[in-house]
Image (cartoon, rainbow, N blue to C red; front, side, top):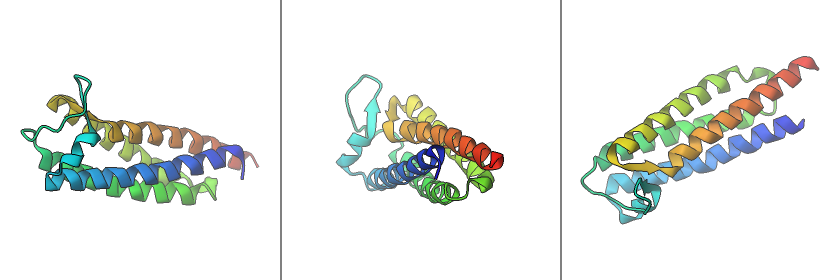
Length: 141
């Protein structure tokens, strides 16, 4: 494996772990758990849980996007082994980044931003970059 393939695989595995946190956070929001406070950061600076926001909507969205991100992580980890076929991963990762940014936007409108969504967007972009580099290296060989 080339260094870019290894980085691509590492970021894909990180997406898997963070996606698991996203799924767990979505479940916490759905059941109204006070543990959901750690998943949201108030724009004022402290961790809060405001029951007045549409926690169910954000929870369902978090659960769906988290499950989708699990699929993206698995696809990326598999594509890192054969980087000539990263096309499917690229499409899935772009949708993942857009979905994460939509979640961030919803969080901003409610006054709270989910750090997990921001992290997924950053990891998705980095995985796209290293996946593209690994793909180009594979084509040059």
